[in-house]
Length: 382
Image (tube, rainbow, N blue to C red):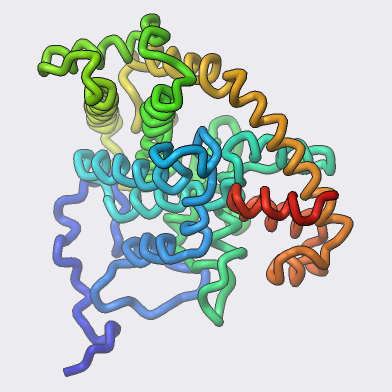
């Protein structure tokens, strides 16, 4: 009996009959930059998901900051655990909305591959450095660069050779401007699956960053008195029998908060999809507005929670002290690698001639984990 995957059945055991009209079909994928034979028992978006999971960039996410520096505590989220939580939420939403679960999950798993060490503090520092050179840095764009160029997994192509649908799903911020991929203008809206992954990312950081801030005692539950979403979730938890000061109460409130937000997104998105009634995925991408969204009633509540996180967590004095250190480390390393390209990693050194020292240094620095960056700074900067 042959065990060649290419000789196995190409049928999807789950079929596409469960997908809604607006979902991306596996059979209608635009394919990869370099064509490959079909796999015997995995659809293309499943293969993309697996390629992301097996990439070096994905493994490095375990050593990159979400809110607290990697290594600050055993129970704080890292960029990897955040990514897994985003993918879980994306798959739940996609299943409920009859979208393509594998595509939504693959986009969610890849969305932070380009993130810098030290979270958004590191990203802001690198953006400032590149802006001074007439450019800038955005981790979404870097994620696309990781899967297209920086990963080296196959002898016949740079990057992971992902499908068009996953790659285009990593291109964000389309509102008010035309985005391009491979020189082609993208539709005004991402696919429904990409919208799901994007909103799952927002939902995850609303809830999980809040949970970590409470765990790290940057804030207390009393500080959340003016945050209406927290109060709503707290009331739900109490009605279910959870009472403070039980250790499990906070975790149960966070669970109620997640359930509340997910339910609202499902209700709102189902209504918006029904009203727009796109005939297919292309139709959904040419609508005037996204179809995956919170209800009008919840949008100001989410903005209130977002503003609270910005004011009371991300700008907390303890994190401001860390930010000062992070900025110094990023600035020092960037200047050092530009002056001494021989200290770059092998892949980055090879790209200096074709892409320039600034781009090569930025790629190398963006790919570091927190610990690697700190160790490099201690070793190289005197």
